[in-house]
Image 1 (cartoon, rainbow, N blue to C red):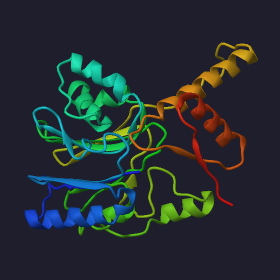
Image 2: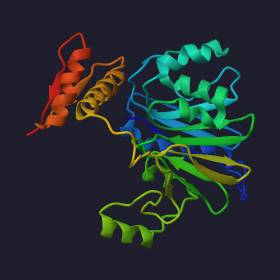
Image 3: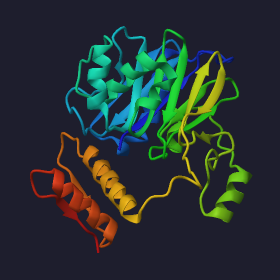
Length: 296
């Protein structure tokens, strides 16, 4: 679990913050999410652009420091999550001329963005929330994974600054962000027991919905959906045994691709069939006993 935060005030209509003020604001935004990433931190401050992150190191412990930029430095990323197919992406991107300087899955994203632009998300398998500053096009690109495993909040201040972060408390460290409670969100919470996307408990702060990306350029925000669940009510029917076999294969692959790590892996056992199944599949792909934990 990592955390990201940042803001873009290139098109802010108010007096521009001094560099020292930006650095202090970004530091405060990252400090309140230190619990998400105790291993490392990083920041980029440049011409009204502030990107920061807290890192929990899982892959490429030494070389995965963020922010990470592409070859010419025009695209810079902060990233929370894990890309499961980054080892397959690397040779594809190297074949197109990209040069990798680390073994980090983060670097695969920034090169994918350089190659494919906004459609880079179509090539990613994983859980993620990331922000890329494209200095060539003067554009911020933010994306969230298909299922919304990784959180991402954003807001536009009254003067035109876009502020984003992994947690609400991070955004609230920016002096331009309002703290007005949303009556619509309160109604939803008392009716549903949670606050649905794209709402948050604060009126002017939104969640980026799962399967969506956001672009911010020239002071304008655009949000597009890049993925959704598909369901075929009258699709081709197969035998029950075929569905069972496909489910086994999908579960096995889902577990296998999540075992890429440069740190020891373990699993929580709840006592139910689901966690026991996951551990059994882990054992098939690991060359040492699986460390398991249970509570209660």
